[in-house]
Image (cartoon, rainbow, N blue to C red):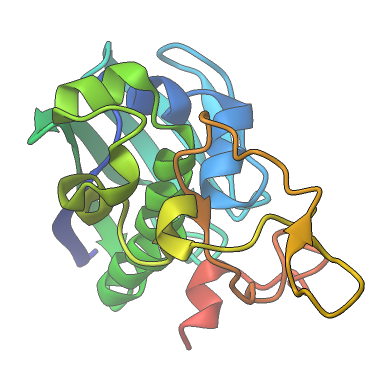
Length: 223
């Protein structure tokens, strides 16, 4: 049976060990994608993602570096074998290059899944990484918590859709106008130092659960 394959990669904020661990953790995997994931740790462990649309088995692990899985979705023909997904995490320019090699996909579905990885994994993962970048990650990038907000290298890694609190220059939500027409604010809350980056408000596509999406898959949205 004919099959298709492709390779894609991108660079994100954070360390390889952190992203590797997040991929294999059901709670953090769910946070990264915005949809429910279940992951059994270890070789031979089963997993689901995107509310059960994706499912498979982990077949190889190299701690903090490489994950190999048998992978399929509900879009696969019943007689199609599982595809093979290899995920690599490698340090690059203070962040992590996440590389995917996806092979054995049903004929005619390669472009569908390539765009799906970009839209439904890489983009939300970059926003998640920006929110969770810690002191160790920032030190690897050569910056710190006070300067990350205006560091162009950090912002290049977190990708579009993310703006820092400092870059927004937004009035704190507790500000209130005074009487007498002075226009000055009082009761302003002091910004917390731990805030590095926040996600720009964005309309979500059909929600994050199968029920909210009408059980439509990431792949079907591209059609």
